[in-house]
Length: 144
Image 1 (cartoon, helix red, strand yellow):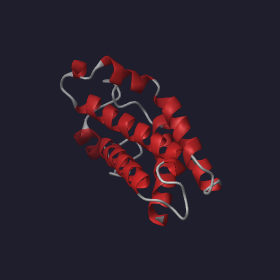
Image 2 (image 1 turned 30 degrees about the vertical axis):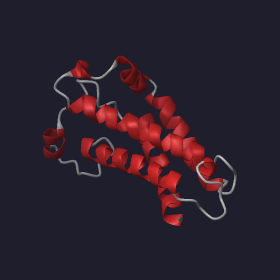
Image 3 (image 1 turned 60 degrees about the vertical axis):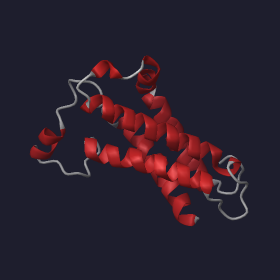
Image 4 (image 1 turned 135 degrees about the horizontal axis):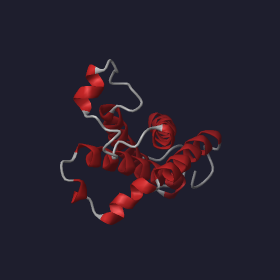
């Protein structure tokens, strides 16, 4: 469906920009809580808002699942959109993990392997931006 194609491109680029240029909410000195960000005059559409990131993370994973289930115009099922789907899953997981670590009272409750994802958040973000742009420019290429 064309709607999920558009959402895949949009969310991959948006999640990539969040991961590359946004601040890391999992670091205690940068996270001041949801109440403080709202009271300081920022809105829910703030690029570094935890609520905005939560919505983007959930939508990334939802659209990735829908892209794997829906086929776009004579495309190969599952494999046709593999790169943007994997990028969407990685971005959504990274953003949701960062949100969880920022809002969790126990910072050590995340396994070390999952915590290593946050160390490579800029790489995941760059891959997401590339996946979104390539998926937009070359819509009929297999794997893109």
